[in-house]
Image (cartoon, rainbow, N blue to C red; front, top):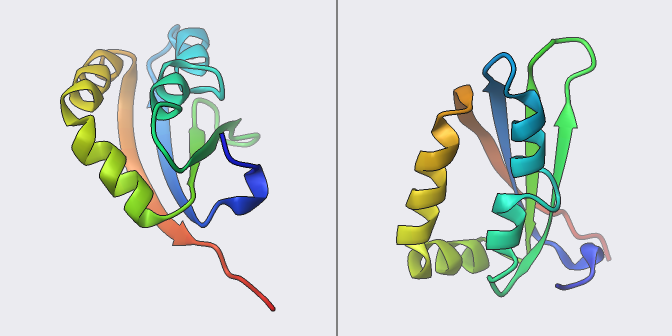
Length: 109
């Protein structure tokens, strides 16, 4: 896995797990969870962070770091069947899931 300081592309997702599924959700979406282990197969994956909202109960955000938009695109295209399979399994533990945005790192010289 590349060093964290080489990331150039970030995808942020918002989730609201079903009541009673929070522990399983955290294990699945955390930095050593199912998604992160799957992403580690991809060239250009830099890591995942999971945070829980301190003021809104039941709201979580994931931050998936990649070296570039192209690295993520290539990974998804190459692993689409497995991506869809994991996504389908994970739907059972969440009420809502939405992509908040994609971001490119600002480089200063």
